[in-house]
Length: 138
Image (spheres, one colour):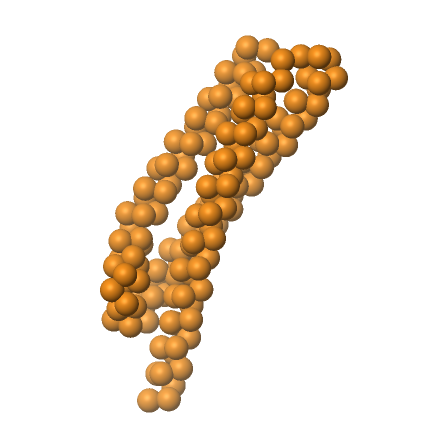
């Protein structure tokens, strides 16, 4: 049982590390440019190509988050099944419960990040449509 517990903890740590690296990379690239544009209200200064590039990057980031969330939920399901087995045989439940809670917290963080990303994506798509309409009318 000790081996499964340590491999589960290493998986949680691995997911946390991957998420941290992903989030830093995400914030470092498109985030700086888009955040500055959002903060200053100068989303209008971006060209159509820049908006398309940022939209494409946001879509890729969204895909990565969804993939990570999918693997996270699979791990939660596996741990839930393990917890049920432990309950049936009267085994120690606390380490598995702690792991499920950690994974759930990480999933909640990812969901929040996905929600923020979706909001930015919507704003960029709206701006892209507006620019395209402006180009057609001029």
